[in-house]
Image (cartoon, rainbow, N blue to C red; front, side, top):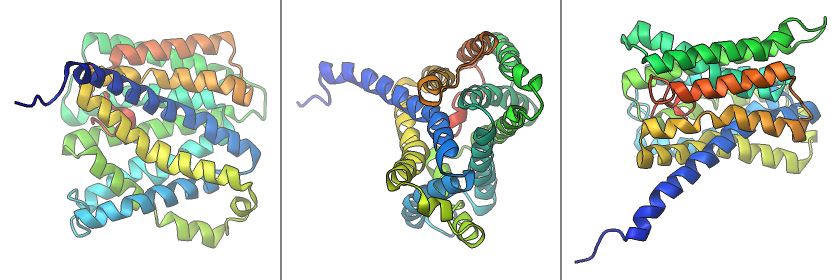
Length: 313
C-alpha cells in the first residue's frame, strides 16, 4: 500500500494554508499603499485601472473561452454583469479615486470595515440571515472605529478633500457587500465569478485610449508601469484570490476569515514608511476598533470572505 500522504506532509498543509492566507492579505492590504504611491507620483486612477483591467482581463479571457462564451462561463450574462458592476470596473475606479483623495490607511480600514456592516444588512433583507450576537458586537466596534478614523476628515480645514475619499471608500464597500451577498445567494464559484468580472472590464480599454490616449501611462517610468501591471492585474486581481481560496479549502471559510483583520493593519503600517502618512491617536484607536470588530464578526455572518467573492475575489 502507498499512503496518500506522510505525517510531515499532513502537518505542512495547515502551515502552507496559513502562509497563503497571510500572503493574500499582504497583497490586499498593500494595494492601498502601492496604488496611492503611484497616484501621488505619476499615474492617474484611470491609468491604474487600465493596467489592472488589461492584464487581469486578458489573462482571464482564455478561461472564459474554455468554459463557454454563450453561458458566460456557466454563470449567465445577466448575473455576470451584476458581478462585474459590483466587483469589477466601477468598484476599482471608485477605489482608485478614493485613494487619490484620502490616505491609504483610510481605504484599508473603511472598505474592509464597512463591507461587513452593509453585507450583514443586505443578507438580513435579501437572505433572511440573522447575525450572531458576537458578530453584532463586532459590527458595533467597526462602526465606532470607522467614525473615529473619518472624524478628523469631517472636521478638517477648508479644502481638505479627505472626506470625499472616505465617501468613495464607503461607496466601494457598498458595492463589495452587494457582490458578497449575491455570490452567496447564487452559489457562484469565486474563480468563475472573478473571470467574468475581469473579462467584462476589458471594454474599458478602448474607451480609455479614445478619451485619454494613455499619455501619462506612456510617459511614466517603465519599471513603475510594469510593477503596477503585475501587482494590480496579477497579484491583487488573481493571485490573492487563489491564495485565499487555498486557505479556505484547507482551513475552512470560518477559520480563513480570521485573516481579514490583517488588511487594515497592513495598510495602516505600510502607509507610514512608504507614504509618510501618520495617523493621529484617535485614528489609531479607530483602526484598532475596526480590526477587533472584523475579528469578532469573522466566521459568524455572511461577510466571511468579503474581499474574495463570498467564500471561497
